[in-house]
Length: 43
Image (cartoon, rainbow, N blue to C red):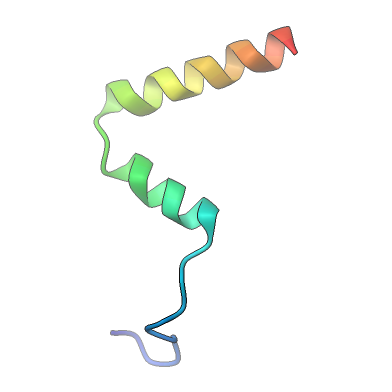
């Protein structure tokens, strides 16, 4: 445990999402990134 950090504090949604992507294989976050780019172009 790190000093000065509240052990009961929930991580931010962006931090949770980043850690989730970090545990996924390349294909998962690669497809997510491709979908994000396509959505950005279309919308």
